[in-house]
Amino acid sequence: MLTPMVAGGVVFPGLFLLSKNTLQRLPQLRWEEADAVIVSARLVSSVQAIMASTAGYIVSTSCKHIIDDQHWLSSAYTQFAVPYFIYDIYAMFLCHWHKHQVKGHGGDDGVARAPGSTWAIARGYLHKEFLMVLHHAAMVLVCFPLSVVWRQGKGDFFLGCMLMAEVSTPFVCLGKILIQYKQQHTLLHKVNGALMLLSFLCCRVLLFPYLYWAYGRHAGLPLLAVPLAIPAHVNLGAALLLAPQLYWFFLICRGACRLFWPRSRPPPACQAQD
Image (cartoon, rainbow, N blue to C red; front, side, top):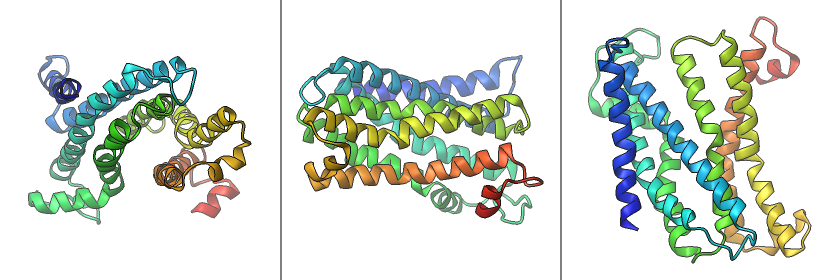
């Protein structure tokens, strides 16, 4: 178990530092540290997402029996990814720090303020990114022990499908970078927004009904009967995982509505939301 975790602890921070230093030092680029940090954090998140979704696809397609079949990548990548969630909490804090210190995002009135104390910035970070920090902490403190110990080698198919939820992350990261550089008007941003919406819907929201359907097909049960046929704690865990996905999907839909139908001519549905 220790080897994959050590490897993850080296790969993700190492890739972040390599990307940041490259963006800052290449003569053709010479980016400011703030921009280099923010883009590098998005890059590492995208790389992790591609690795996770690839591992998930290999595992889920290799397990013909959805309960008993096993694949070595399921446990190996789970252990490898644990340091990423710890690193990413710090990387998100660095991004928040630079936005506050360099770009003057510390005030609600839009006026640049003098750099604040580390504690004040940390409180602002936790307030803004509370749900994401909680999600990352839960992945390390709850989901990792459950997937490694509680499963006892069962259900690699389901774990593989859960890993494929990361398919939407590169589109989310690219969208944030385009917004950072005020490229919301470009065709790339609109295409990326549509792909982000579709991938998030399919791989994060509809993932849970699909897993219930897959178990129902295995057990010979209709979809609506599955929640009553499995333990209550499994339903509770699925609900807790699905809840933040629904919230983030709502935010993505609201952003897409504003992107494709500006406020000057919003459709009735957007008017109701606004």
